[in-house]
Length: 219
Image (cartoon, rainbow, N blue to C red; front, side, top):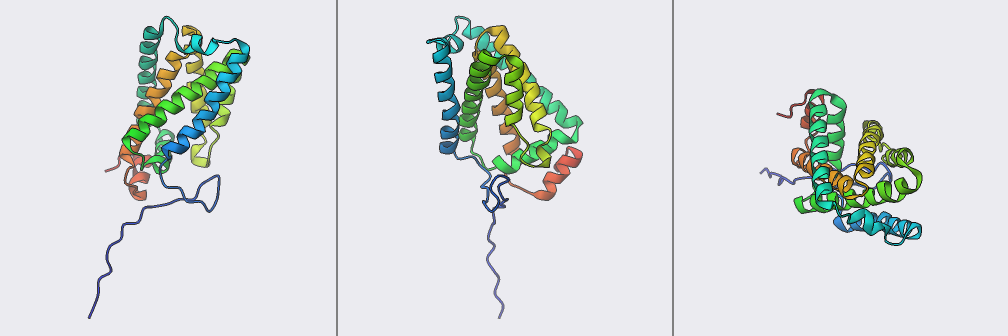
C-alpha cells in the first residue's frame, strides 16, 4: 500500500543581509515602516523649527503648491520612464529589480501605497528639507546616496542611482523653493516602480527571475 504525501506550498525565505540567521518574509510590515519613517520626520521638524519656527509650513504649504505638485508628478513619471528604459537596455537595473522583488514581492497593494507615501515624504523632509536647508545640495545628496548602501553585491549600483535621483530632487526643491515637488516625484517614483516590481515577482521563481535578469524576458 502506498501513500502520497500532501503537497505543501513552501514560501521561499532568505537570510537578512544585516542579521544573519533572521529570515526575511518578503515584505515590509506597515507598522514597522510607520515607526521607521516617523523618526526622520520628527528629527526634521525639530531641526527646522530651531532654524526658524514655521519653516516646515513654508516648505510644505507654499502658495504655489498646485503648480509644484504638478511639476513633481511630471518629474516622477519621467524618472519612472527612464528607469524602465534602463531596465530594457542593461542587466544591472534588472538585477536591482529582482533583488527588490525578493525583498518586497509579497507586499499588498495598499501597503505599497503607504510605504511610497511614507518614504517619499519623510526622506524629502529630512534630505531636501533639513539637511539641504542647512548644508546645501551637494552635502545632502552625498548623505542620501550613502544611506542607500548596498546590502549585497547585487545592490552595488543602488547608491549611484540614489545619488543621481537625489541630485534631481534637490534641484526641484531649489527651483520650487519647497518640498511639494520633490516629495511628489519621490512618491510617484516609489509607488509605480514598487508596484511594477511586486507584480513581476509576487510568486518567486529563481529560474524565472534569473532569466529576466539575463535577457529582459521572464517567459
